[in-house]
Image 1 (cartoon, rainbow, N blue to C red):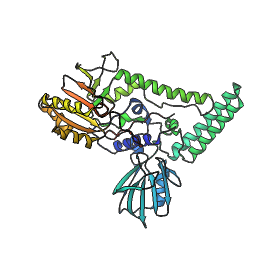
Image 2: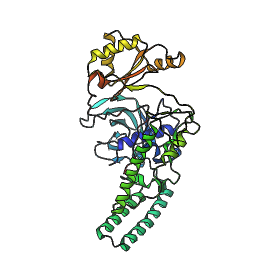
Image 3: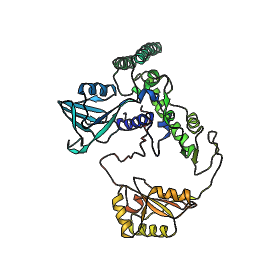
Image 4: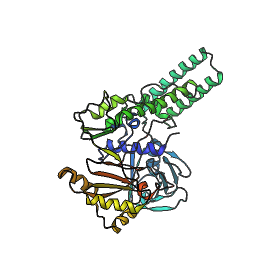
Length: 417
């Protein structure tokens, strides 16, 4: 089943990049980068911005939301849906954790509120919000006409092959029904689950996320051999799933390339860009050609068995020995109070970076970062230690909401099957 929220966050990041958006870091798994997507010019304007005091036409907004792949419902409950009741417009942005409620006075936006899906209670006012499209696929009259014509021929060909092979009538009928349904929805410019497999037909000039990346980028590739193995395994699994469904008559055979080859993608993103490769075990890979290799001693960070006391004692020792420490926790205010109780000074992450660049390893310090990591590590040569919340406070906090966190705007999404 398609994860609308994750796909929406991916698309929101692509749209931001298409419009020149800047990020301190972009983090993604390889399949998300290798998956084909429309060119930047095709999606760069697929967003709506709402602000308090702005005049809008609800009819026009409704048309735009439909064109962006949003589903109209009586009440919003999932990302990628919207509801309209009188002068109230509810939208659950595809890249958001909560829906918004827009109250109008005539054609003017009076308030914009975040609200909880279950309780329907307001969670605070905001001044403005940008709502991005829910689907990457973009319809044009020309692309629809070509895709429909091609799929009709493909369906006729596949049915003829199945009849010649004397396959089960139920399987042939299933394919006819599936193909006719997809063709009808495409003809009406309607979005549906699995439409991404027709992207090569609707966007013959499709690219990948690599094409959206700025040129002045430092590329960091963690464990390239494992990355290649995992990416090829995941993509192969999806393609085999689609082939199996086509064999059973559930869908038409997938035509065109849905993903770029891993090594070609790596060449595209690293060509003319500075690149760092991190490997636990150095391996000979045809697509990895580093100019310089550095060997560093690294290992797991200490575990404090969920006991804050030994954790604070260790921080004091690290500070005394000029070690640079980064503490990652989703409970930053609590940890900050713990540091203060031991008179441990907190520095910014940028300060630690400056001491490294401007003064060698420089003086140490403790930086607190809000986030979640299951475990930490240390690089002895660099006098750097990363400590994580489960090590000194126990288990990761449990939340009823998604615990995935956006790292400078990038959320990856695997190719949906």
